[in-house]
Amino acid sequence: MPHELWRFVFGNPRPVEIEIGPGRGDVLVAFAQAYPGVNFFGMEAQPWYAERAQARADRLGLTNARAIAADARCALRQLIPDASVQAYHAYFPDPWPKKRHTKRRLFAPGVAADMRRTLVPGGVVYLATDLPEVFAAMRAALLEVGFTPDRAVPERVRPVTRFEQKYAAAGTHQGSFRTPTPRA
Image (tube, rainbow, N blue to C red; front, side):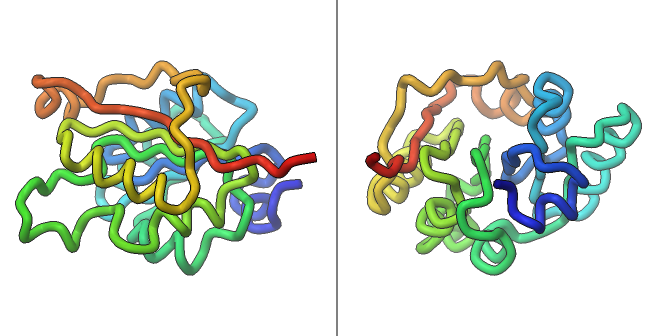
């Protein structure tokens, strides 16, 4: 049963998937077009990108896509209801490879636990990055709170964004991780 918040945001009871850092909305819009039975919610740290992503969805008449300007770490902790999200998408979330920028990274302490708390049982986190050390840190954070790598989760055909074209020339590190499902 969808949470009241999502019914208010989207006006329907469809499942919700959240993209953290949708940028200009390439993936958010493509997924909303390809999967009309799912609501896609984007949380973007840069207000002008959130506005661009939402304007794109609006121009295309997509009623199942919303983008807001928000710090995902704060929104996960304070706003997203427990067991209300079907999947998280975090593609190239940490463009700061320098050690001094570690504090800006998405997978700071507590984020993986907040994702687990807000996901439905069996929910999935999809990750992709061009930085192997960042992927290793994200993976470790998810495993630490009980996620399991899941090769059985079908990867959605995700568009290659301009960011990925520019920075992932050496390759993309990606994976999906699932929350445990309750035993019957």
